[in-house]
Image (cartoon, rainbow over all chains, first blue to last red; front, side, top):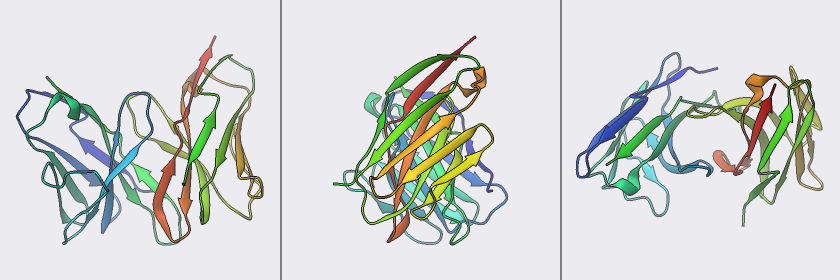
Length: 116
Length: 113
């Protein structure tokens, strides 16, 4: 299966700053990547679908101007949390779908964001 | 409304014992059901994937069952180990978009020596 990495694994920032999270598919070219958010003791919630070479598709209720997604290459997608606030503190996870028909989705290790 | 419900919310067992986790779903149209293991502070890792035609699938000490008629699934863990302590998440995907995943809230399993 695909190996997915995220960087950083955790980050602490002050309120009002912007934070960039990277998601890399290390052994698999991905035209699509997914970004999820997970609050404590809750399930993963899809935020957006990152599309290589085109605009991301955001889920209802997710502010596209606050959560900027860039998918500049087949192996890298970035999520930038702009003007972060304490309520943005969460666990952010990306995933890469497997080969067409494989029905698999491979998740990264996650990034813990804490906004003070 | 597409939903996936899991029970129990949490479970404590002793090392070496077996346990069974439950998943009920109301997702339609159904494509497949997956069980993931998520260690604390880590991303989910796939354990099993089953389509509607598959009744059971095993992965080592993990055995998943699926009853597509009653829309229920279970994950049985045999001879539990300390490393099994994690959250187990039941996930269902839609047939018109298999990348669209409906997540359960998970069962938090703790295995004690």
